[in-house]
Length: 99
Image (tube, rainbow, N blue to C red; front, side):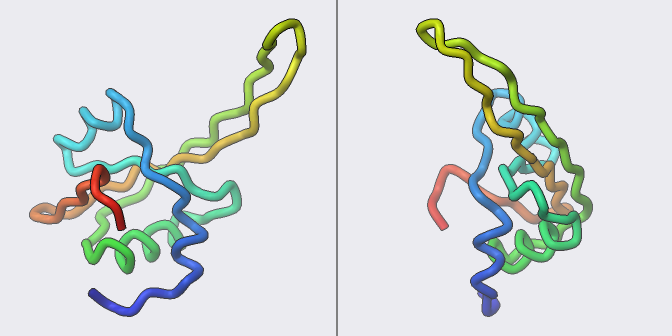
């Protein structure tokens, strides 16, 4: 594995493991929760260096925070950003294992 910059760990926060992201893994796509200020080139570089794979493309989604009520108290969830990373043929990332 190549040398990694500690800043790569700050870009990618966690993998997203949902039914939809698991179905996307059949098409060489992996979904990660990333920092709100992370750019596509930063995400691509971090994934390539941390997981030693070749990235074909990166799509990002910003999910706006929802207003929720819990026991009568109104609160707001934080905004989150997700990155859908498409990998080149022959490359795979197993997000169920640790880094």
